[in-house]
Amino acid sequence: MSAFITGVTEKYPKELLEGRLGVEGNCVFSFWKDPNLYQEYKEITINDFLTEDARFYFSLGEQMSKLYKVFDEVSVISYIGDNETILAGFNERGGYDIVYNTMEMLNINNVEQYIDVLNRENILLKLHEEGFNLLNKIIINNKEIIPIKLLRRMSAAETLQFFESRISNIGIRVRSNDMEISDLDIEDNFIEKLETGMLMGIPFDIGGKSQKDNSTIYASPLLSNISMGINKGELTLVGGFSGSGKTSLSFSNFVMPMVYRGEKVCITANEQRKIAWQILIMIYTLVHHFKYYNLTRKKLKGGQFTDEDRRMIKLAKQFINTHYKPNIKFVKTFDYNVREIIREQKRLHLNEGYSAFLYDTFKPEDASDIGVARGSMVEDSKALFQFASKYNVPQIITAQLATYLEKTSWLTSQVLASSKQTKEVCSEIFLMRKCIKEIELDPNNKYYINPYRLKRDINGKWRKETFEIDHTLDGQYRIVFVDKTRNDEDSKAILYKYDGHINVWHELGFCSPSRIDFLR
Image (cartoon, rainbow, N blue to C red; front, side, top):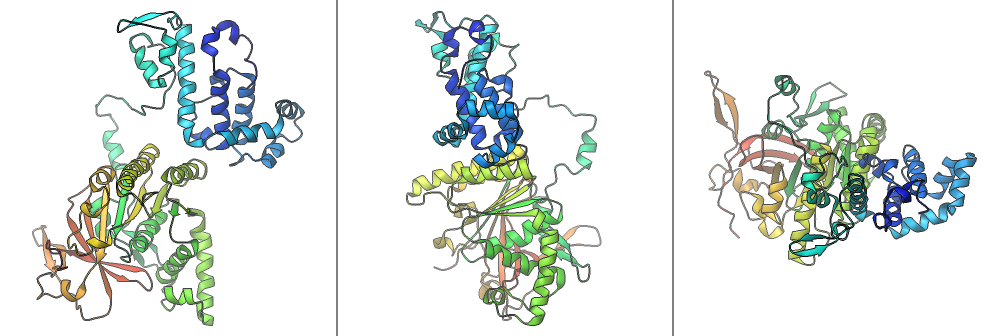
């Protein structure tokens, strides 16, 4: 960073400007390294910087961020183009080599700290302007202290707190507290706000209308009603044992209904490749929109098609690319670094308008140490929730349950790693397992799950109406347990018939699994 702009060194003592060049450089080139930060930290403006270089680079980067997602050499030179004034200023400062080398030295994970330090330094300047003593010794706890030396060990928020009684007229925004303070009154438009459905989540009762006969594509009406949809600003966890179908259910019965409701959904996956999700959306489209059942998951993977199969695949492809491609983004990640995942989610939300997120599968970054892994999952779940809450978007995460707990009959959050802490940050927790139909669908067995539906009687009251399923017939069944919901009673179980070969989930009704674990 170069010299200060005119008047700065005359206005402020040199002690207040010590280290300023590095502080401004860290902030500006962090924004260059991740242009999405211009959107995320809109409160940072050119006036927060006092050096000529910082103002030059910040202003240039702010304009480029409206066009480019990455500031590589080609995009920078292309943007500057024939603007001789900007080009001369850029080259005088060392050209792209200086920019690149500086960005390489910065760790983007520290951007919040860089910005906090800049905020703190600007607060110190404001305090000086207001006449506060920052340079002369004062007595604190019977010790002589120079205020500025003490304050530079503090965050921006702590600096404000230090002068809390004397800084009412200093208006620098500090992000670190992220608080909203208001009176708990009832506004005149309170009823109108409720009538808009603002507290409702995104329903996942249906996934659209069939292209063939305009029939309703049902997803999970019962589960959606219990949870009042997938809730914005909240974390929803879908847990299941290996092979239970948690990913398939999440895609078919959560993602696709959200897309139908107008949401742009981003899927982040760290296990299954893109082709697996392409097969899911192809099967969904063929079965639900075109009522074509001859192509199963296995047949699609095998690649042996009839002429009719090819015709239907082409038809489904056209429908997907027209209706789903603009609204579903797929991100394949090769590790479990949640901070990196959230950073990409922020970019897609701020720059491309993605409004709902699915993360499959939620696991610790390092599973070699159980204690460390549990601590990591606690922090990661908090980070995922904070992103959802801050930007008011729904975040669904899938989690695999431990194999050794498969004999558990009634699933609760105790089957989750770091169950208590993870449960605290989730709005909804759905846990699923395979139904052992030979015993759980047999009315004569002690583990019989007693399937039932709720029907209104002549008096308008809800009554249980039991029904039986022939467990000797083909078919798979799954039980989804509502372990937690903030919108209804929890400790409910819903029975699904699962046609895995075409990924269709039939919501049959409620059930009452035994609270006694299966024999081991």
